[in-house]
Image (cartoon, rainbow, N blue to C red; front, side, top):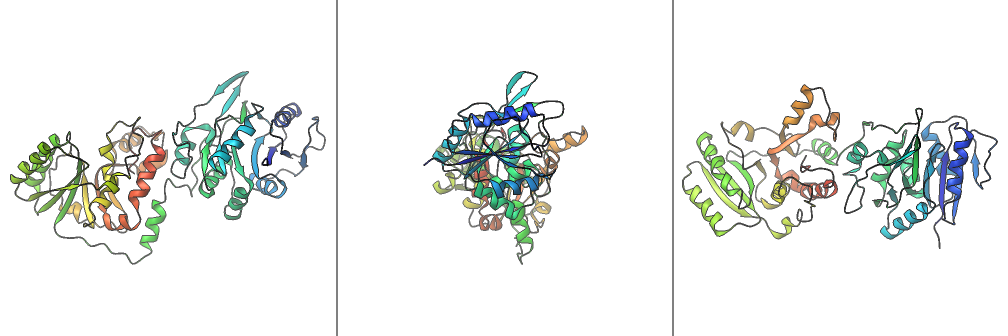
Length: 432
């Protein structure tokens, strides 16, 4: 049995010729079981198209959505502005079939723009998993125009009703954000749905950061921790960790000797690794014999922990898979509650005691701003990917980590999933 789709055409006073073109493009869709719901102040229409007409006065987008939820009869909904139109007669049917195949209740299609008689096909994500998730929706909204409004989307009516029951939706960007967070599964659709007809008065929306937008669930976790009675315990003996492979063993000596020279207290340095040659292991033991205050402890990564990161797509990454070892530190060093993570290319020139004793106050990690933050601040620019929120971007080469909290909230799992979801647009690992 074919699923019914309601195509909602929103007319805010568009010229009749554009509205007619839009309605006719919907009517030509090969999908048999569909209805057209036109929300328009017009009383007379020059279009021989079977439709249901709702005639409100000028209302907000939030009120428009409630009209959609009230009058739409289809199991799935697609929204169009009257200025825009469907480009391909089979697009709706193909995308609906793709949703069914993927058992998804939300899909986002590629975008085509018509500008002064020329069609421009906008770049869309090349996500190998085809998934749109709570991890990648905000970066997608920043980088790809198709994610800044909802007209390239196809979603279930039930999903819309659920969102409207929980959220005060004011814009199309907000609607897509909430749909992604509320849906069972969202995917990238294969076929372009609508063509955006660009004019001086009808421009593609720019990304706008809303107060309730979040890149991940980390902030909500930290808020819950700070409202609890959690207290961290800081031992006297400093615990450090690094992640290595055979290539990085060559850089180990400078780091550990700088530690040994500058520390004022004993240090345990845990060296985590997936695999090392006998020669590399012998080299670590040789270095350890020459140290006074630092003790090197080799800790292989269990297979179960490696599986967190082995599926991450590294095709576009500039760094090796070992970079992601820091994600699984809590699962490897299960006997530790706190640790300082360092990259192997660092040199320590002062005691780490003040850093080690810094209270994290319920936060998972303590870190420093990345140098790019200073650069953007100096030239009065914003991060392309993070905007003003780029001020929070940190360098993951040195972190103070509360491993007890990280295990409690399964941050290794969430961080690995974030890396999986964002590998197509983040050439550097999104550890933060």
